[in-house]
Length: 115
Image (cartoon, rainbow, N blue to C red; front, top):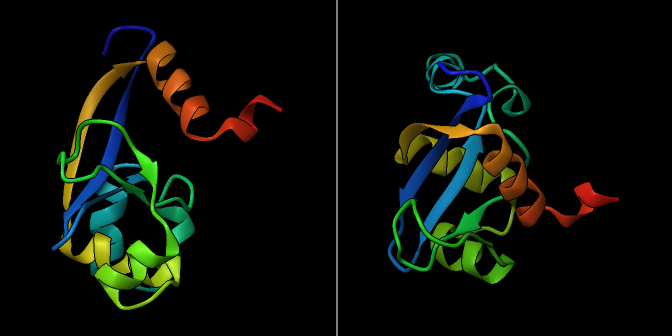
């Protein structure tokens, strides 16, 4: 891997009404979690935030999923339960990104990082 690049891993779940994405540490941690559910979610996901892409697949603009969107799709507003369903039924995607664009996307998706 060239210097300054990193691998971005996410799980994409195609729902009935919308597409959902969560960022994960890596594909291996997801596979370990699937094999052993005693592994805490904190060791699998990169931030407890669920994003929707408005039916644009795993690409496109990410918006935070509202409680009502989660309730309509997963039958619960509990984000931990929704993340479990996304990890169980979603597809893992990994691709290489430059650290600069990765850092910018993190800041844009979580403005609290600027503080």
